[in-house]
Image 1 (cartoon, rainbow, N blue to C red):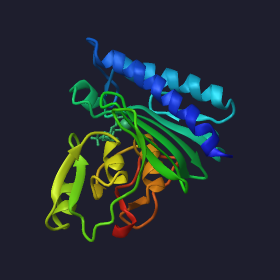
Image 2 (image 1 turned 120 degrees about the vertical axis):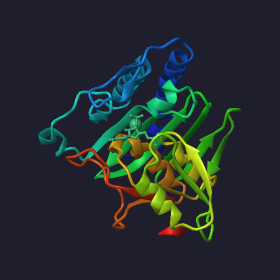
Image 3 (image 1 turned 90 degrees about the vertical axis):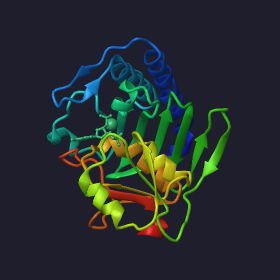
Image 4 (image 1 turned 30 degrees about the horizontal axis):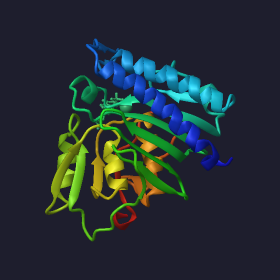
Length: 255
Ligand SMILES: Nc1ncnc2c1ncn2[C@@H]1O[C@H](COP(=O)(O)O)[C@@H](OP(=O)(O)O)[C@H]1O
Ligand SMILES: [Mg+2]
């Protein structure tokens, strides 16, 4: 499959979802809570619907797994060699707290690995995308597109971590990194900050799901970075359990 040929259409889908999301962000939206007590708004649902419709028009036979879609039994998912993995809004807490640091995420997974990803930050008017092996790009708030690449420092100088989910285990890991600056960011933007060379390392010794990481993982891989489990294995997708293991994201210099 030629990912580069469908990438412009995938970016269009993410932009269309972002526009819808931004419209709701700027309104007086209502916050509800899912069974697991995580917040959800009309923007999560609207973004999911725009993305699903858009991806279906790109390809009718690639299945879609979305944080906001119905859960699909493992018996069906286990046969998927290629699928879209989407998080219609990552950082819903940042959305409800109006920090602007939330993202729309679309990844294409093949044989358990992310091969293409698009991440947009509607309120920041930034977007990142990448095809693994072909490079990563950022569209800045002026609309200018440029290639991005991870920094290659000798040690982790700028550590990026969650604003809403920075737990004790992650703090202890960060303490082992020596002198550093702590940059906090919401959502999958943390991976994008590494991809563009604005941060060096993102340790997450806490829970995330496959849809939280997949699209930005593709961007990071395309920019010369990696995400590995604490056992040194690459983070994989399409597992029976959608929870990710703890991981560290950084440029290749770290691993
Ligand atoms: N206990 C938990 N179990 C699973 N995922 C969790 C979790 N706590 C946080 N997350 C994930 O972490 C994401 C937010 O990360 P961060 O704090 O880095 O912005 C959430 O994404 P959503 O906002 O899409 O729900 C959520 O999926
Ligand atoms: Mg998420």
